[in-house]
Image (cartoon, rainbow, N blue to C red; front, side, top):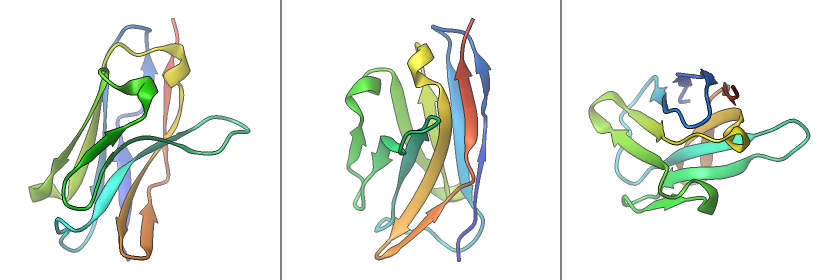
Length: 116
């Protein structure tokens, strides 16, 4: 079992920057794990925002390309999501996940609200 703890949610003005973190509480997360971030808004399904693929490739949703950057801190079993030039449509609950084989672990989510 891997517990994930997210941090960094909050209220941000449009055009601002913010950073989310997600730390895995136990074990060693090797390079064959995949990990990333989804966003969910009320009444909608979670949508992929950014991910690090098993073997280190990176994917972004088209809506965040050029604005968001996902990075991994292997020493801390953590991933970060740097969000720049935030827009109101980036508002939502951000969930991190770590995946290994058939097992997927989710964080509890952290709210990001982009509003003036």
